[in-house]
Length: 198
Image (cartoon, rainbow, N blue to C red; front, side, top):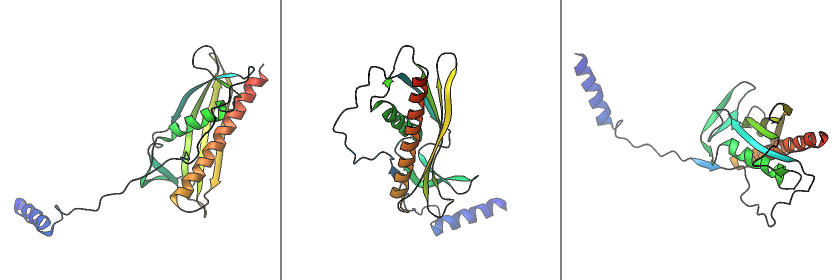
């Protein structure tokens, strides 16, 4: 009797088209917080002779901060957009932003080998804040500057920028501004910490 009922249910689904119906394809939209319209006409400035040497170490993020764009709906609840994606994981964008902030103006020398303090960064948040009336881009970065034996300096850089428009483009621009501001703060504090130790 059970097998007969199962056959009737399946035949009803097939005849009704439920198993064969095609749904609309999901349109995935890709975003980058790096402005593609900005062109650099000059190369990065050469570091000054007294510029401190810094190695940019690990830049990591939690497993929730991957390709899908994260939104915060309350102080304790986060979710992910179904169809909005980053072109890279947020830690990749943050690594490039910190490298630009540290080395492009020549205030620090980028060390690849040898004995130099290492800057590690953890991307804590990289999200759309929907808890407010006006949407905002929010970025939080924890950083630690260390040598071979001890932590020289550490801290948290937080930045939030209101979106100029409610569109996803406006929100991504706000996240980009927050990322660049937090990265600049880390670069400034890192270089100051090393200069004070001389």
